[in-house]
Image (cartoon, rainbow, N blue to C red; front, side, top):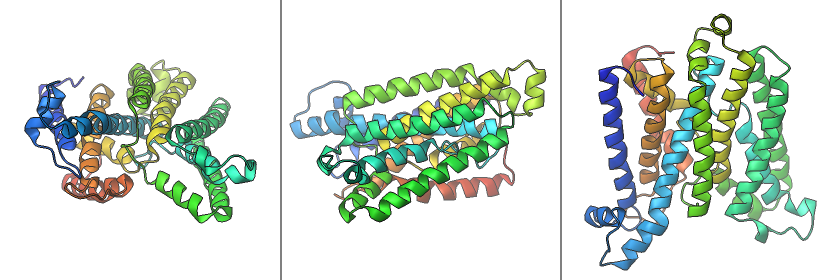
Length: 343
């Protein structure tokens, strides 16, 4: 939790904004639901319009909760990677885990006909995509972990992660070249990212994985603070670097990998939110930054998802496009205003 009174006030303000964005996200969509009915539904009351109750409880609440989990997980994993590599441009996907998940989804969607004739596109659904993406992400994770145990240079690990990402991206490109237009379109649609496709059961599984990643991150706070001053300083402070690096990478894999598996690759959030949080809280202490990025990331993705729904319209924009279009100018403005990047 934030330590100073100023940061506590800022954190409480973020929590209030999060609650407001949660209610707003549930109220707005192709069918705008009055705020009064939204509050009644959230409090467990009965609505006179049954269609409103069905939409809220079976679609919009799971979607809003998914946005909170996805935004929080991506933001925290981005913070972990930026600290581990001491690189402000590092994001949650620098280790190639997202690329591995994309490869798993690509093999399921586009490589099915090359593997077996009976394996048709009808087998592709939200659950099978999540499983395939998870397996792809785990494959790259195990490869990165195997390399991490054999090298001491953290920057070399970053380069290796980028190379794994390039390899998997190349395989996806080859599959895209040989696949049919129908399957290619399905894969592109998956790559847009979405927080609106999860059932309550899938949401529960995603929550469990993300909570595990958050717990590992909390155990790594001391190591993260020491790593800010370099590996030599961390070593002098008694931080076991191999163990610390392993926990940070595992936590990032759980957070970013599960998000990619269940919601697709979602850009910008993991890169930008840590910087935005540092600007607001004016600190590099991870005791403050870890809870801050969790809340800030949830707020930002809820807002982006609300805008992506195009309230009052039947159209839905790709969440990836909205996160970048809305978020990137905010970061540029903050950096110009502050004239420096806290790191």
